[in-house]
Structure formats: structure tokens, C-alpha cells
Amino acid sequence: MSRQLSSFDYCIPVVVVGGGACGATAALAAKAGGAEVLLIEQDPHPYGTTSMSQGLIAAAGTKAQAAADIEDSPDVLFDDIMTKTKGETDPVIARALADNSGPTIDWLTEHCDIPFALDLGFKPSYGNSRYRVHGWPGHGGEDLLGLMHRRLDDHGVDVMLGCRLSNIFTDERGAVSGIAITQPDGSREEFGCEALVLACGGFAANAELVVKHMPELANARYNGHEGSHGDAIVLGQKLGAAVGDMGSYQGYAMLTDPQGITVPPLPLIEGGVLINTNGERFVDESLDIAGMMLEVLAQPRGYVWVVYDETIEATCLYTTEMAELIRLNAPRTANSVKALAKAIGVPHKALDREFQIIDRAKETGNRDAMGRDWSECHVPEKGLRALKVTGALYHTQGGLQIDGHARVLREDGSVIPGLFAGGGSARAVSGPSHWGYMPAMGLCTAVTLGRLAGMGAAERASKQAISA
Image (tube, rainbow, N blue to C red; front, side):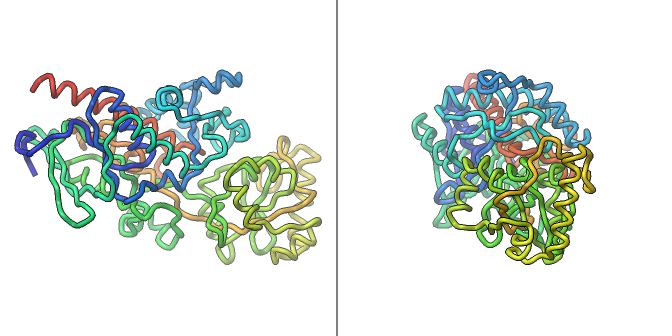
């Protein structure tokens, strides 16, 4: 629907839709750029995908890396992304993330007082070739988002909760001119804006869209925010926006049953293995943390066991997830392979055979039958542990097509003036399917594109004010 900016009763220069890490970063960046900003969040209390995450962010070339003598750079991260996705991701977006992720982490740390640190317990793995995973020590995604919203308040950003975006208006040139929102009481409000940032998540909670774009997940468990309906993508397409990689998603192979807690990748990175109900391994656990989800679901009874030992557990205790699982007494424990087999209900001979294969690979330096290299891994042996896990869909990776400045593009490649997107609303860099996701890239995409979008939105609002 065409509508002039001047037709609205009032105008807010920059509006950000979505209160997760992407939206919060965008709002902080726009405010830092001198704009008046309103952030709109559909939930009565900000939660979303960020709060359900581990709160970890991949970034290259940070000051924290330099302080730890870690040699990393935008070029290395870019190459890692393109290698992991087999060259099938958007190189423009990949370049933007590689170039801006480090400065974004440094800016959030220094300008916004968010105490990110380099996680030296998260070894290079699953596509990341350097120590580059950052987090707030001792805190997960929920704490991180809570802190970001306190910083929004500190910086004077207005926030409206319980309001859902229902329409986007453009003028006769196709530029964003305003939005309509639905408030908690069902009433509708319309107002103008000079720039709009869409940061309201992907579409993993929209069963119709999931079946359409990822039919293999029609019956998969979903471990994400129920508000991820794809509103931004649907409304953006109505404006003529292009989309990309709509069949891409992050699955995860280690959601504990019945606790529903995400096991961090660290037990597998250090030497843990996945065992099915037949007592057998079925995959190289070091290869693809996201892609293994489908293989886990294909196992008998649809669940498997993460098997590790007390030595590996000790390296993971600093993570909030492992600490909580231990507090809940979730791991099954045993002092021998035979006792472990009994504890988890799998055939002893089959499980023992798997450990013999691993031991032989470790001793000879050869890869095991699954192709895994054990030269730098610890083989589970003393104080065995096992967690029951299944695979689940965590979030989608396809979305609105953007350029290197987080501006939304039309099918012909032209920019929709005033419209920006990031986080789950935008196309990410995981390639066309489930096998291209790298650890901590979800929040990397969120905060990096959020900052770019916020900066761009503030710049546009400033130019609009000058020309008015």
C-alpha cells in the first residue's frame, strides 16, 4: 500500500522490529549514530532465539584475540565460511560478516559495556579454523539479552513490548514510509518512519513455511522461540523483496531428553562419541555439528547417547549448560564400558567393539572406521558419562536478500530504500541446506548485521532530515 510519510500523524526516524541480539544491537548502533530510535518487540518480555542460545559469537580480528596472541583475520574467516559452505553462500554477505564481526564485538564491549571475552575452551572446530568464539563468561544467551536490554535503557532507546508488526508502508518511489503495529489489546497503530530495521527472527515456528522449504523437517522437533513465524520475510516479499537460501537451517544433534538442554559441542570436540541404541557409532562426530542432526534422527528410536568421560567433563564445566545438566544429575555414569552399556541399555559387545576401534585408531594414528582423526582427541576411558540426546531444528538460515550494508534488495538487485534486515529475518551464510552452519555464526550474523543495519538506518534518517 502506497502512503506518503507526511500522511502519518507522527514519525519516528528509526524503528527496529525485534528485541533479540540483532534488534538490540541495531537500536544501540542507530542511537550511537544520532538517531531517535524505537524498538518494538512482540513478546511482553524479550526472550526469543537469543535467550535460547549459548550466547556465543564468532568474530575475527578482535582485541580479545590479539591479547591472547591468536592470529585471525577477516580474510581467514571469509575463507572458512566459503569452505564450510562449499562456495554456495552469498560472498557479499560473507565478506560483510568477516570484515565487520571483529569491530562489532569490540564496539559492543567498549561502547556498550558488554563484557565479551574470547572462549579459549572452544577449540577451532566444525569450520572455524581459529579460536574465535566469544561470550560473556559464566553467562548464556538469556543473561546476554537481559544485559543488552539494560544497555538500551542506559542509552535512552525507547522500547515497546507486546507489539507485533502487521504492515509496512512505502511511498510512490517504493521507499519505506511507515508501519502498522498490533498492540496487546488488539488495537492497531500506524506511524511513519524514515528507516526500518527488520530483526524479528526467522520462520522455524511456522510449520507451513518449514514444510514448504524444508520438507525433511516436517516431523522434526523444534527447539526455538515460538514467535519465529517469518513475519519480516512475508511482509518483505509483499514489497518485492528477494529471498535467499530458504531451505537453509541450523539443526543440532544434541538436545537432551528429557531435560531439553543443549549440550555444547565441547564434549564431542574433546573426544566424545555418539552411540545409538544398538551400541554403535554412526558418524564422524568431528565433521559437522549441525549436519549430524538428520543422522541422529535417522537412528533407531530417534535418539542416541553422547558418551564421554570425567576428563572431558572437567573441560566443559565452565559452560552453563553442562553445569546445569550435572546439577540435574542428567549424565548416566559408569566405571567400565560394560557398566555403561547396562546403564544406557545398549548391547555390551557392540559398545565394547566401538571402543576397541577407537583405541586402535588412537594407537596407530590412523583414522577410525567413521573417518575420524583421534590424534588430538582424548579417548573416553575413566569415569564414563552418557547423556541421552536427540536432534532438533533450532533456527532457519534463509531470509530476505540483503547487500553488504544489510539493506534489503529486490529481485532485480535494487535496494528497497529505508529497509534493512538482519538476524533470522535476513539471508545468512550457511549455504542452501543444513550442512553449512558454523558454531557461533548465528549470533555473529545477528549482532554484525544488526550493527550495520543500525548504522545505515541512522545515516538514512539523518539524510532525510537534512533534505526535509
